[in-house]
Image (tube, rainbow, N blue to C red; front, side, top):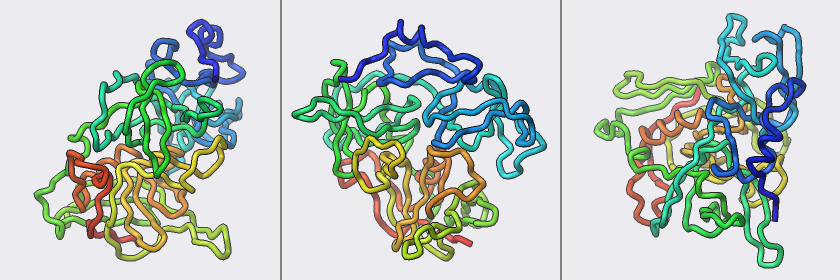
Length: 355
């Protein structure tokens, strides 16, 4: 069994020195509300494996003062700036200990612990992760509790039961693409029905439509030809990494939203201890619109670089904006959930134009 960090251990670690630029030493999990003197302010999580550069000023031409080299490293964000020097598509920079980091690969996160539910509905309960990340554990009959992937802030998951975890506390049992595993219950909050209920359902299907501009990297939602929502997105990279494979650029043309799932596992559908494996459990607020290659709208927690092409074909969105679109677009996702068939909604939904 893994060691759990104690309050005394954490206080010894504290905030690291200037040499490591104010990162928070959360390397052993699970985080618990009892054992951790966790920060209450705004924190950033390094969302990529390649090193992130820290600059003396919010400008890529300024002096380099250091690097962050660890994926999932946490750093205090003191304030935000949007200098005229840009970049124009995403001018947001974060002031951190020792300098400035461009926001592209730093996910804003918080620590919010939750009271575990006493029982889970028979149909399951959709929950959202409210800590920077939570380790997946699965109990093996021969080897005990084994650690695998991580679940990340704002990802969504179907909880189907409650078990006693390796720390003797309540852990939720999550059903994910045929897999079942456990995470600490206090790391997830139940998503209430009102956060999934439809927005403007009185507006008929024929009056809603979506436009995706590849050039602008934008998504625009219309009702009766009036703009009701517009935001930056990240569409597919204009490359074909495998000559015989599927290109990564987002296909252009006319489509319809065909399938909505508030939680989706993207990848091969397996558990792994490799942090670089393409396994993305709990991709939030997924709406498939291209039937051949499975291109979809969905929330993205692995970058914050919206306005630039970043994906393998899908339309990446900020998770809270993907939730808005999920609620607004047809087909209507029905709540309350009656059974596990209600975990997705199929049907010819809102028209989508990609150009």
